[in-house]
Amino acid sequence: MNQIIKPMEYLIFWSRWIQAPLYLGLIVAQIVYCWLFMVELSHLVHGAIAAERVSEADVMLAVLGLIDVVMIANLLVMVIVGGYETFVSRLDLADHPDQPEWLSHVNAGVLKIKLATAIIGISSIHLLKTFINAANLTEHTIKWQVIIHTVFLISAVAMAAVDRMMTQNLALQRAKPH
Image 1 (spheres, helix red, strand yellow):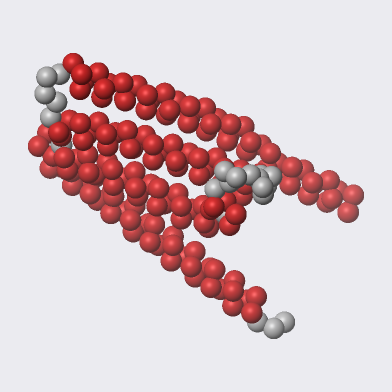
Image 2 (tube, helix red, strand yellow):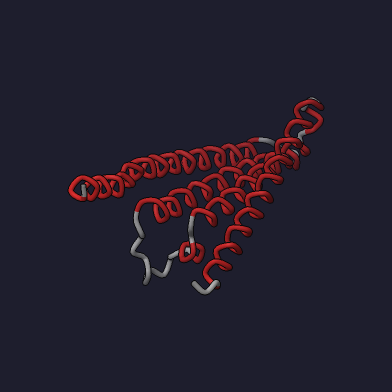
């Protein structure tokens, strides 16, 4: 029986490498977001140069769009680096001066909380853009964006609470004498 189980266990363990191309695909998506950022930045600069007077609201909306792209790119980095480290293989970065601080204690729970807070940040930027541009939007659209943002907030708080309970339970189990 062990002759069957041992190779099967190795195959199951090796299967984590199937995710590696997915992370490479996210790197390509990050390149696309970098390109999008540069295009949006050039539109902002050309618009400011070409127009005699650009409204502050237009500049603010454009800058918030740039911030949104950066936050999504940050989210991609967290998923790529944190996901690879958590689910595929350890990154050999112990002595690397640019190693992110959060990477030293990353796990699935930490990654979920970081992703949830990043999504809330992105949602906040969208909501701020909505409020700045409220005169051009329907009340229905604004209401649903606020509801969706609120759901993101509640979900993040719930995930953090569950993660905290699980961490406390693990600590209690480790502290129990066997």
